[in-house]
Length: 143
Image (cartoon, rainbow, N blue to C red; front, side, top):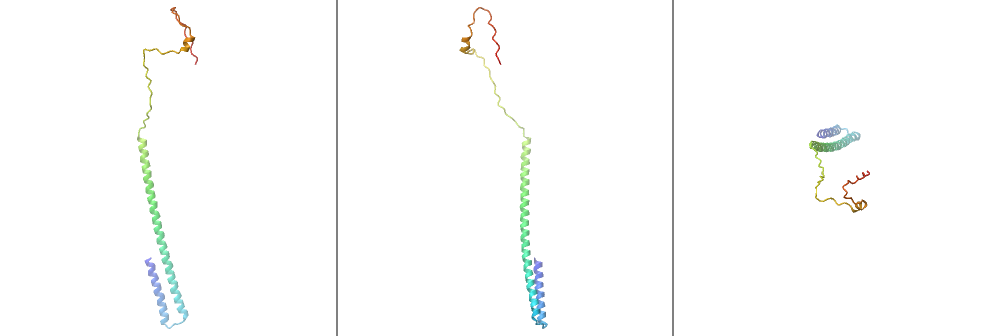
C-alpha cells in the first residue's frame, strides 16, 4: 500500500507540474487547463479506488487467515479425539473379560423322616398283606 501512495503522490506532482508549466509557458487556453484538471481528477479517483481495493484485499487476507486458523484448530481437535478413542479401544481390547454366572447348588439332606404320601393313591391301592409274598411290581409310568 505504501508503494501505491508513493506512486499516487508522484502522479499528482507530475499533473501539478504539467499544469504549472502550461500556465508559465503562457498557454492560457482553457483546453489545456481543463485537460490538466481532468488528469488530476482522474488520478485522484484512481488513487481512491486503489486504496479501497487495498483495504478490501487486506480484509480478505485477514478473513482467510482466520478461517485457516479455525481449520487448523478443528483438525487438532479431531486428532485429539481420534487419539482418545484409539486409547480407549486399546484399553478395552487388552482387558480380560470375566463372566460371572450364578450357580445354584442343590443340597440333598437325608432326614430320618419318610416323605408323606398322598392320601388319594393310598385309598385306591389295596392294603398290603403280611403274607410274606412280595407285592407285584408297579407299572412303568407313561412318559
